[in-house]
Amino acid sequence: MTQKPWLNQYPKEIPTSLEYEQIPIQAYLTRAAEQYPNKIAVHFMGKELTYNELYVSALKFAKYLKRLGIQKGDRVGIMLPNTPQAIIGYFGVLYAGGIVVQTNPLYTEREIEYQMKDSGAKIILTLDLIYPRVMKVFNKTNLEHIIVTAIKDYLPFPKNFIYPFIQRKQTGLSVSVEHRGSNHLFKNIIATEKAENIPLELDFEEDLALLQYTGGTTGFPKGVMLTHKNLVANSSMCDAWLYECKKGEEVVLAMLPFFHVYGMTAVMILSIMQGYKMILIPKFDVKTTLKAIEKQRPTLFPGAPTMYIGLLNDPELKNYDLSSINSCISGSAPLPVEIQEKFEQITGGKLVEGYGLTESSPVTHANFLWGSKRVKGSIGVPWPDTESAILSLETGEKLPPNEIGELVVKGPQVMKGYWNRPEETEQTLKDGWLYTGDIGYMDEEGYFYIVDRKKDMIIAGGYNIYPREVEEVLYEHEAVQEAVVVGVPDPYRGETVKAYVVLQKGTNITEEELDQFARKHLAAYKVPRLYEFRNELPKTAVGKILRRALLDEEKQKLEKIN
Image (tube, rainbow, N blue to C red):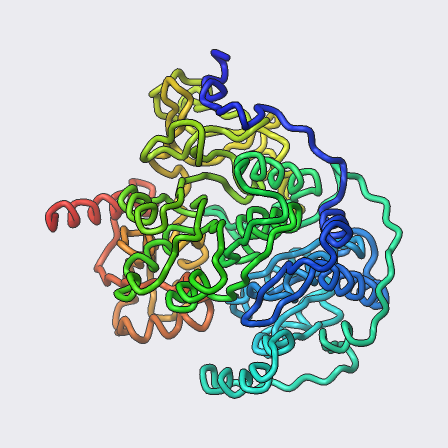
């Protein structure tokens, strides 16, 4: 116990070690369809699907993928917001023996091309609105087929009739795709394909279920290889942590995107594992969310700080009843203490902070919801079967309590490695330990705290943004001589992206022009919100830009204001 002081904090209801079922992720949907065939699994803008309907549709999709030539281990991209098709597609790929490549629907052509090429995906499932973007890079990748669906495909009448007109007004786009050649319509597949079980031999520990891309300050995003074991383990840990939740009874607000590993594990997989009902919200919108909470009465709300802040700041909050919410685990970014306290006061439920990263499927630490104390400002304690330590930045040796160093973690949820990147895998995984790049400490009782990032990653609104990627886009503009990007404090998004730019001599460009250029090449959440033009940037003796010096300047500005 002295080696793992956090185990002393565990309430009796949470085992310190778990038994993990040796089954693939898709087996949870098979089981749910057997146990709860007629139970509502999904509510989506008025449309509801039972567990049996989800299961049958996933089998149909899997059969069609096999017809298109998908073999065990082939990669299939899914580029969708939280819709029934995202769940059906995900499990359909797994039933076919494929590996899911989750792709953010906000990605630009440049980002889609990179991820499809790097993963070697053969097929992508996406929305009609995204179809033009994908087709522009289709021939530059290994993609052979594109399966297209639409929001209206799973809307009840008359919403399915009205929605395309609303969509056209909002986006200015009207996309028509025919079911022929390399183009395939999802609704046609589900309407005509037969549901059949596909024999499949899987190695629970070694076979991949998912390639989840994450970036870094050293280059382009990397495909994190997550096995069936990784995802089963983390979902099981999440279930153990939420021990007061009742199997088959909870209603989950499914707003965290499934293309993000946190939403995929702690919302989608957990819900199907436990037979919960999911309220799907494809895009966070305060009014839509408040109405959904009042009408659908969710009990479980995994989220990001941005979501809780957005709800609390709405002037009409008092007009909505949020009392159904019992438990929330916040992730993706630090949770301000005042937000935690205010949200609990409004809902009467519990909101605690957790911690994780893509490479660990993702959760490694969390505060307790019930049965033991939680510590403000702490990310909590390691989950069952998860080891954690703080290592000296100088020597790499394990540090005693209250000394600051790098956080490392070890457990069955830790990735197999990075896709086709053995060198970077070796740098991050050492003797089974995952080096997180985050700086923190552990107190005497085993509670962990994050104080800084070794990496320069920016977390804005729960999204991970990697400065190098944004900088490379800015450098492509002919007027830009130098550019460096940092995350500066933002009361709503946690952090926001700020770019410092030095222009080429004799050139002139406005913030608006540079912003328009960046938007052509980056997803909207990565685009700098602030620009500062300078004659020069602070540098080391060897010419490396001092990002930390710029961050210090921002901190000093804030201190003067406050």
